[in-house]
Length: 164
DNA sequence: GCCAACGTTGGC
DNA sequence: GCCAACGTTGGC
Image (tube, rainbow, N blue to C red; front, side):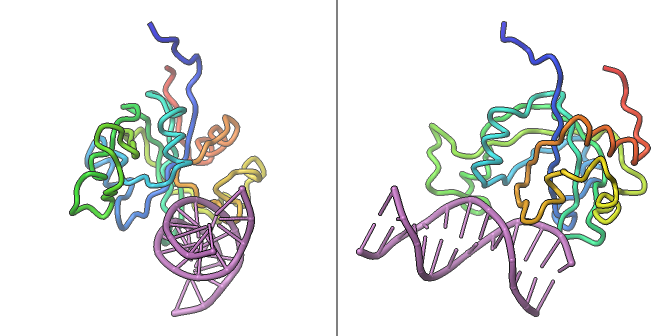
């Protein structure tokens, strides 16, 4: 039996709400996090992101830019089929079907942040001073979130985590 | 709409 | 292996 990690980790996933919003995730109940086409993010999905991990769902390129909700990883990395779909904008003709380049995970919603925690508000929180999201040029679409940052965001958002 | 930051590509 | 050119991300 594979060793199971003792404690879960936490992440921030970016999404443009015009493309896919936290409300969409609530509506769908769960979703395939497809379209990741960056090696650093892919490596995190492949090596680090596990079932039960927490996800802050961030709306980028939006008005307002904000963490809109909390989600949970419900399926670990597996090949993203859109890389082999020639009609998909995520198609990658160089990817080998026997050794797919791109992976995805599934996530499900846990709780909305109501109201959403805007980027502007996050900037004023001392506990989040070192958060990757707030650093200049931090384009990574899947970012690690520290335990302290996670706790601070959930407290600010009024989200009570169920005991697990 | 602008453009800084960053990742990728490809010529050499 | 270097690095200039290019494309994309995403805040402002």
